[in-house]
Length: 83
Image (cartoon, rainbow, N blue to C red; front, side, top):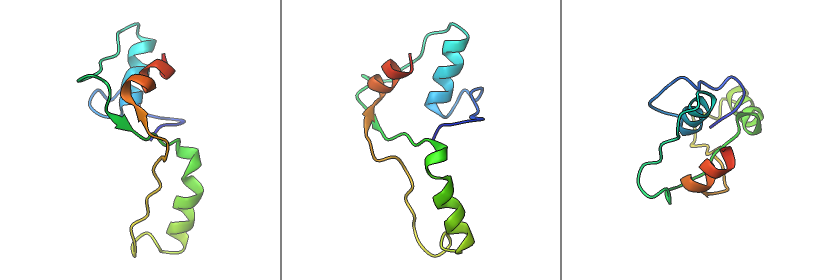
């Protein structure tokens, strides 16, 4: 997940935040492996309404709700797009 007020100072999770921090500080971004790993990134504003409605309806405790991204992207492609 990524979006406004994202923590870009955590060095151990949130790959987009780590890369943004490195780019801002003129450091290289690090890609483990060959970069062909696939992820689906989710912009926080795209799922907030769903999360709020699930909480209000008390549905979140009764079922699994997948609000993740649906567009797969390789780590290499994400790095190119961010840079």
